[in-house]
Image 1 (cartoon, helix red, strand yellow):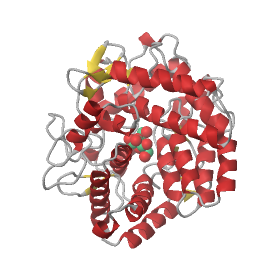
Image 2: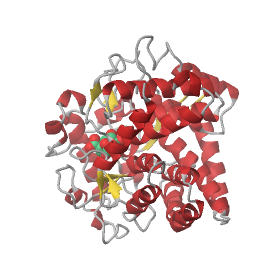
Image 3: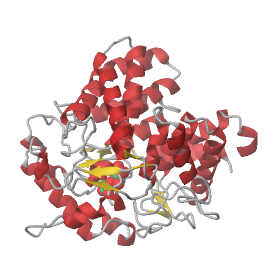
Image 4: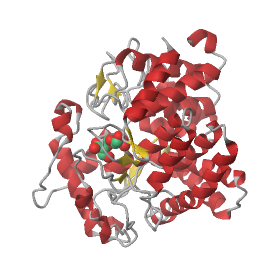
Length: 440
Ligand code: 9WN
């Protein structure tokens, strides 16, 4: 495997998808700016264009709402059809939405502060990178304030997500039971562009889409204000979302030290969130982290890779670490003997489908997050192996959005930005690790 040429190809993908001050996830399928995509993209960019990496994040923050929410989509003026478009959301119904940017009315996996810190750490021009952190600190701070205060709807210290799109893992089987129970009162007219561009067997179903639209309409009806959260159709304490918020909060703490700003709130949020993740979302019985469905009051006991994301956190004990590492090791739930790691849901689960979106295929950002976790917990050998296998999958099949865990075939869109960005980061990490001789 030629790591140097793989990096060069990845850089070309990010150049191809560059538009004004940000990077489209994909030219045709996703022609706007997405929240967590931009976080991953900024990390990749910072290896070859520090200025563009910083601009990527600043551009996303232009869409931030006055209440601190960073929307899941900041719409661009570029040509290219995407639905739902900005008109669908009518975000102006909430006076906190920005005046000069069109955005969606929901947020997405909060990995941005973690990415901003990585951009700083990778940068060579530290003075400039420090200025960048100073410039964005109050934005990041108010985003965490929004999550930890406004989105802690139950008052238990956990952030609630209100739409499957907020999870970023849209049609994950974790949401099946909730979606199943939602009765559409009037037929929801849906317009889809995605399944005209990509074969529909790889995308969510029309039924999923009608429910996604329905939930979004309910949020819109509440003017994106949620005092009455028990009336909402989808309210979840999502393990992955809360874990990434905590990871980002740790990064925010570090950022505040770099720029010498001391904020007591960050420590308070951090303590509250770590305690809540460990006490509410950890199942002592199953030795696993599970999401919680606030509306039905039930634990969502499905096993997907998202349940393993807490591995990246510093709060786990030995039993928790071992149980996750065991799950993601070869020949177990997410990594078949002759296949490619890691499938997005357990290979053994009844919903598993190797081709369909978040219901089985390998996603590079998920592998990357697990690799961060393995490194945090000191499993450097396994982290290097997983990095190598991930790069091997991409070099053989291309910069696809997701991959078949058995054959490695790429699905969804090609030239997908976060696949390219994280390739650059994985190559760098492998090259600087002790395992270079083995894997280069
Ligand atoms: C809806 C952009 C986004 C990712 C999500 C992924 C997909 C959108 C869609 O694409 O979602 O937000 O239209 O399917 O599920 O994680 O951020 O790449």
